[in-house]
Length: 322
Image 1: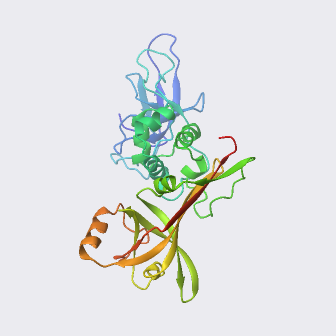
Image 2: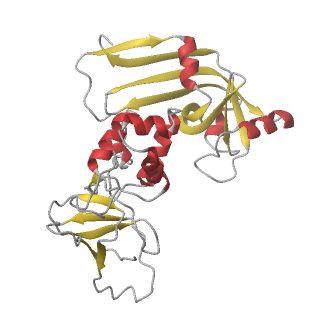
Image 3: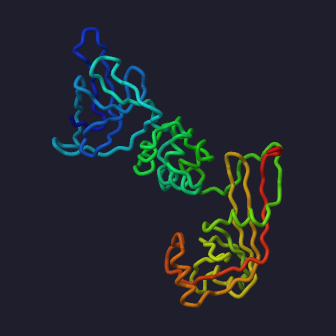
């Protein structure tokens, strides 16, 4: 069996009294048009993942842009997969393994795709797919599909994933990527507390994106950099003559923070200390080998700057009483 997007899937068992079901194929899982399919049923407007049985047939629509024999386009599914149930009206031989859901509204996902943001949010917290899928009441295989393919999950699935990852649906869809953080409402009863040195060091972790404050001929400047924590030193790569490179040989401030837009809470850690240009070949090689990522800004940035923390402080905002 092969189908194109927009074709009709008809299920009608020869059994006496069996109910006929018909729906539009709105998603393909394989480039050659073979099952399974995402089908929007005419009687319920519900989208389900369908593995057609012997009682199913495809009613082909005209597709001028796809001549006979051509492979249909691949389309990411919009299904929510908390479990499995029959989708053929209960008749013998009907499609099995159907799972309810619906395509997410609000247009296409933002830059990077939902899958990339799902994977990034999960990996930042050190969570496995099994853990996140369990929290979101869905199959780990479906979460893997969402992370690896250009899918657009339904609103229910996306809401559960946001809850499982402690973020928002808007964040997973890429909304607000061009807006500054922290535009949500403040907590009703916030509590601001100081972080201890050990907790500050733990939140610095081993790498990420932070901001370094330097003095330039044009005045103070604060710029974001990809950083590493190696041997209790904060290190980042830059290019000679750039603003971050001006940190070398001066006393600088370095800041890392995280905001939970959904819960209106967050933390920040500030490091103050001298910075220097790392020139020893062995030290440079060790920094390069231990780096978790290339600088997001791209280009040739092979100048390493190291900051020795002299003072570390931090603060956190939480709901009062927590």
